[in-house]
Amino acid sequence: MERKRMKRNMVHATLWLLVVVLGSSCATNPGAGYEADWESLAAHEQAPDWFADAKLGIYFHWGIYSVPAFDGEWYPYHMYRDGKVKEHHAKTFGDPATFNYHDFVPMFKAEAFDAEEWAQLFEDAGARFAGPCAQHHDGFAMWDSSVNPWNAADRGPKRDITGLLEKSIKARGMKFITTFHHARVGQRYADKPEEWGGYNSHFAYHPDFATSSTNPVLRKLYGNMPEAEFNQYWFDQLKEVIDQYSPDIIWFDSWLKMIPQEYRKQFAAYYLNEAQKKNQEVVIAYKQVDMPSSIGVLDIEQGGKKDLSESIWLTDVTLGTKSWCYVEGQQYKPAELVVRNMIDVWSKNGVVLLNISPRADGVIPQEQHYILLKIGAWMKKHGEAVYGTRAFDVYGFGHAKVEAGQHGGQSATVQYTEKDGRFLRSKDGRFLYLFMLGKPAVGSEIEIRDLARHTYCPEGGIKRITVLGTQVEVPFHWAKRNFWLAVPDAELDEIATVFKMELN
Image 1: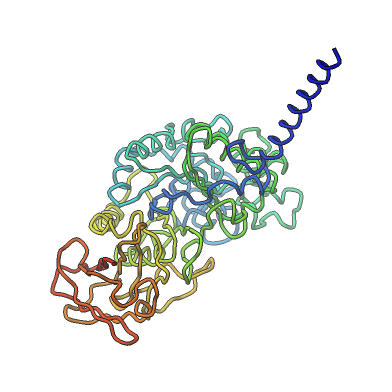
Image 2: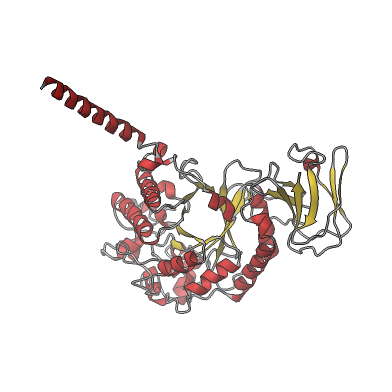
């Protein structure tokens, strides 16, 4: 009897020890699930291979703010504050005290929206991931929501924009991204009259406007709720999108730091655990220091890093030059400028998220079609040197004038020329690709000093050089401290010419 009792106690002790060990390892073992703490969350793959391979994604600023098509996507911010937007609004639609932002909602019909057409355009442009700005700072959800009454399925278009795009994008083998900017929606100054127009709330609080409404429906658009309630509302909407659409990337705009850390941790744990259940490798993208670098991928808005980065990073850039959303008189960057700046990003271990701007009716303007298809034609022709490649040990050379970006790093509109070169390499190390950011003159010579003194390509390390996509041989030779190649008489590319170096 005593032996049985001792044996039973040993079994209980063993089981208890097993529970303790498993419980303590749960925080660092992703197979056991992620806990809502930074140490546990850091165990996930911050930038999976598919993301580093993808190189280009497309998203778009499209929503209620597209209806007035004036000044930009921050129209709802400015229409309640003194200035040109408020004056334009009063002249065009009426005083904002009587014609509020929510009065634009029925005007956002998206009658020409076609998810299949959009997804095909994104694929033709060379994107490997795409998706919507799921919710901008204005509080309107572009998905079928039971949490947010102000959503595209119940109001405005009365269609599940996110759901339709998810199906069309994933059907083409692309990954799906949803971006969130809604951390600014919360009213943070309701009890501070001296700060009713404070910057960290998108809608200016004032008793004259609907932004101060306590109506149970209106308050959810304008964020007029206690902080704790808003923080939960912020998370509940993210959870809903994860559950319904399984995005491969969730991307956050600035002001994420306005959400307490506990909610950010809760989001990350939920997203990563759901992805694990679905066998997904997902990406969390953030700006500034809004997430630990071990948790997600840093995004630098409208710019890029000035030098080679050890970690994968992201930049979101506009195709339009006036705003992120469609506005009357919108102007666009030429394909040449966009592609050359993208190459620079890739050479420094970055990925590009390109923003386009559809009209309120759901039409992507022809000017944008033309530029995207021109980018796509270049990507298709040079895909071998782009997709699935990795940064080389030096990013490149040249003398283009690089200006500072507005949000750190360098500008996304550097005027590169055929005198500027950038490198990428194949993952297996067999090939090195040299991108000249323009069309070099036939017969000219290109000097690459970094290549000559680099141990990766010592003298004799290059077996053969061709113009990518052809069998045209490129003459080259080594000098004491320099490496030279001569530009052959071949079909060179006006946007960027690529030389393929086969390594010994």
